[in-house]
Image (cartoon, rainbow, N blue to C red; front, side):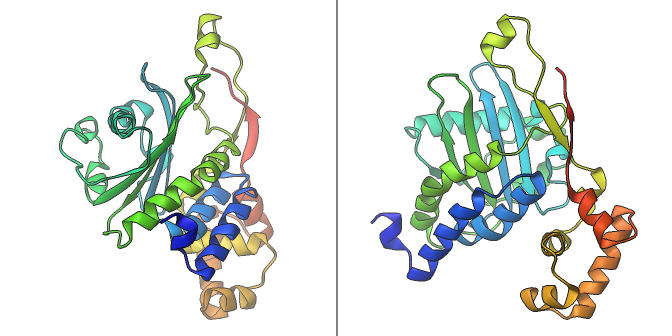
Amino acid sequence: MSLLGHLSVEELGHLLQTMQRSLQVDSHYALFNWLHKDVQRLIPHEVVIAAWGDFSLGLVCHDVVSSLAGMRTRSFTDTTLQPFTGWLFKRWTEHGFKPFINEAFTESAFQSLEDDSSIHTFQDMRIGLVHGIKDQRGRHDCLYVLLSDDEIVDRHKALESLRFLLPYIDAAFRQIAHLPGQYYEQPAERAAGGSAAPEAQEIDPLVEELSARELEIMDWVRQGKTNAEIGVILDISAFTVKNHMQRILKKLDVLNRAQAVAKMRPQTHPTHK
């Protein structure tokens, strides 16, 4: 049965909403919220790893999106993650470029992470949903890995959801600029000696200290909601929202909500090779 015939009317509505909201992703912060709130309801996960580049040459960049401590892009290097995502890319190729569930996270899969402090967090992930996009023209392939620390009840629906949503997930990642230092040269650029990288957006390191709940609250603050309105939306008291806001202001080292919203916006600057 296809995905559309497998979903309830409510789930179909959420699927369409998720597709529509993917078009509004314009920053790493917005990407986190979209994955954490919209995609999460259709594809359960704790960590999303995006890998792109020339896997045959090992020239691959990575983004790691997660609410777990120490599981962000800055927590890893591309060199550390490349053997892991390269191994999954090979398996995806062997599966005929179709989405699959990987449960065999054997020692060989994590061999590249032996010296990394986050290896234990990866090994806590019980299951991974893997799918990608094969670039037949530019060899700029993309692989997406959604890791979960819990069993997936309806695997068929999860895989079909990933197959259906992959173009939107891919587009959402492409709509945000590289982090500083993330720039993949196309083979033609390398042969020509390289070129200047596009502009990149830098996130204040303090933003990464916010918890998933604090990021969620800041999303509503950015939309102009008051503490009382946020409390109603999140089903918590306005007093609890106020306490969260006080912690957010302290973590971001700002004095008010306007400064906090400004700090959440990535700063655009030119990045070079």
